[in-house]
Image 1: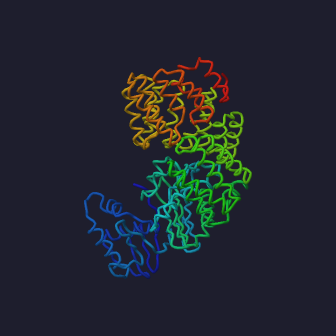
Image 2: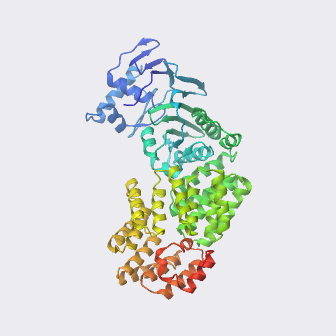
Image 3: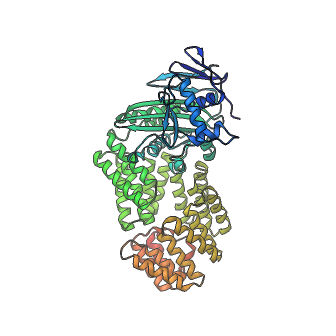
Length: 595
């Protein structure tokens, strides 16, 4: 059982003593049935947060099945005890078809002086001293729950978390889980401490956000994972244009609550505002929300949002960095009709603009370094990766990309060391767990790679990339039936990935299923007349069929177009049949590798 502190809650004329299970109004005792008391306690412990009906019923009646009617009667009795009618929403608000939310301002009063309580704005800030005896080294910021928001505001919850993650990542003393690690909690009414355990962190920042016209209400709490208790909680009710001040306050209070000693530079970056224009900031939040979807439609929408943001504020460095990330991913994966070479060129322009405006952005440096790889500029890539990591040693994505840099350049030991650092920073990242397997795969350690892919699939059985790479490993072990089955799963999960279809064609060819391989080759050739199809994929299918001459011709074209997979030239085992060919050695030189 989690340790409970001797504290009381006050709201309006009421006081609820959690330890003594007493409830009073203006000092006069009010009798509550046990389950009604438990309901009230659960609500006031989570002020401003929508608590789903299922969560309430599960926690209030853990060993008994009850229907919604029982919960509704409990809420009705509670409202009457609070001095209203059964439908009075002054304290307890009903969210139709969802659950309930406690809407009054709550003051937490500690009975044993272990808490410092101060009043700020319209809410209470609580700092729990005794929880901080051990140094905190890791934190996760969960996507904020959206309360009563329209579809147009769906970006707010994840956008707010992403903005705070960006700020807090500037603190070197603490590892902050990246947005990619917490995305699965978007729209989920989960227990913050349970999420923290799953994310392997010591504290969790959780909150809720509600927008009404030009006003925004934000409730936030910092939760200790070990004790499942809040370190502090606060609520803001401000104009949306003051959202920057809200983020400033949250970031500063996290640092204070965790007793972090910040350098002057860290303190400056923590409160750095990248724009003063709220409309541009809102577009940036929308852009990051769509970018995090990693889909063709999401990338196109993110680019539109970032372009509009920098049109409103040409000095908005973070929006240019977002634009660079979007164009880079578009060229790397080849989602749309745009040629990779064009996407990378646009990405480089955006990254350079971001760095010209603010050279301290680790994200922009990592994006530029990634671009240098795709542009075959390897010395420049190394220098910029090192600068990104110097600026933010806890940026796991930069370390992940740097691991691939080392692998492509024939330094597997450095690659393994760098990706281990990335995994340490983000141990439950499905992407990093999968890429641990990829690093083994490139070293021809197929059994070890399969173990990592299976670990990733234990985290998420529908993670498409893990299925793709598992298929690749099976193929190299000549387990063609298993490889074909996994490629088909990858294609289904990705919605028809061209990359996975090309790889399936290669596997068909190696398995002796020539007609199936030729069918996929024909399909992709026809599709190439209306959308971008990577020449690398067409080359791979021809290699599976043993058509060496045609395969090399497609590789030459892939090199000219800077197709995403060309930077894998030194490590892709499917290319082994052509490695001794002089034309392949010339391709290695063109891509910037030693022949």
